[in-house]
Length: 98
Image (tube, rainbow, N blue to C red; front, side, top):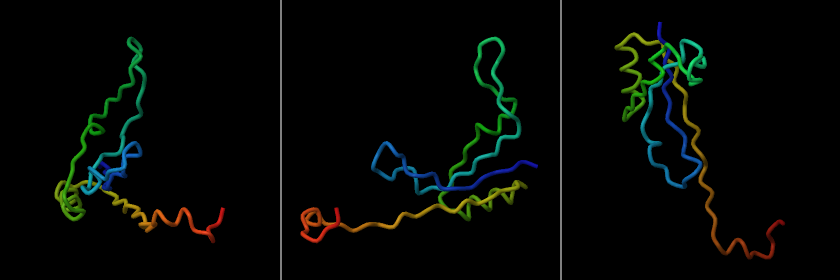
């Protein structure tokens, strides 16, 4: 049975925006190990399910798709960062800790 992972992708570390982090993604777990090609040296795998990446608007839609297609899935809940409210003036407070 094919195993799938349902999650929301994390924020890109190279940019400050949160683009492409609101959708839920269904990805398949690797079924076979990757091996280097003896002729060219490229990394390849006989498992083509690793190339499939499906995006859904909600978690429930992704779970419904997995159940409708008989996939064994695991839902990974996203880590929601707590917003830190700061003011620029806090940099100049006399009682700040160094």
